[in-house]
Length: 344
Image (tube, rainbow, N blue to C red; front, side, top):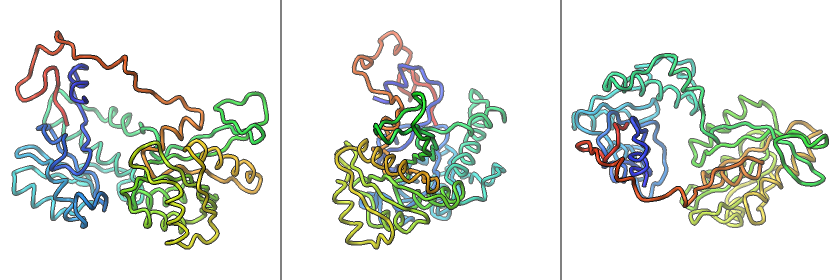
């Protein structure tokens, strides 16, 4: 469906992300202009392997002979470089190509991702003259962030009516700080809480978290409950078949972790219920010192969480899905889907 959409849009450049691993992923049918491996952590271990080196080899499967590969700083370079040499893929490390102010900061994925993105665009410019990118383009690009990547927003919460809005209805609601972040594994959560402490030093944190069943729930919960300044934990369940039930997560907190001063709360029902419960509690405690609500743990809870905060989230409309246009698909390019341009 994604390839069909790219063809319909006659895309010139596509940034194509692997769904899981790389070697056996459905996206690996393409021969790209550039392969990129960002960072590697212990995730999906039942499928990809239980060591960093084993997972690295699965991700190395996206490399192609004669196609350059760019890697980030936090990968096992010996494993990846050896595979690149074996198949004949020119090997580049982002930190060798770009001097970036945040490159040395290993506890911020935003800095690391910006570094890799800048290096990738420079390499693509070198291998494909249709993708000429100036330094001005780079600066514009790295300032952009998709939603829920340490997205800090101020929302207006009315404790009496338990309603949230983006604009004050004429007095009464309190502005509360909320951070949304898709961090859902141990490395991402560790970086999230390190950045929270750097950005909001000493501020108490109220966490709204939901997880997928296949994550290291015990490890993630231990990290969260041990994190500095965490005051309360609201557990929620996404409307997704992979989601872990909130009560199941709560049981793990009580059985495998010492929550200390953290109040573990299993939200009743939806993500919306959990977010509003956290806002209500934060609104009540606001006079005591600037508590921040942090929503994290799963990509699958983010859309509902943003809706609960008053944002309009896009919906997939069946009316927009139809058969491919015959007229726009008559110009096949060898090795590429009809109407589909080059891809990364």
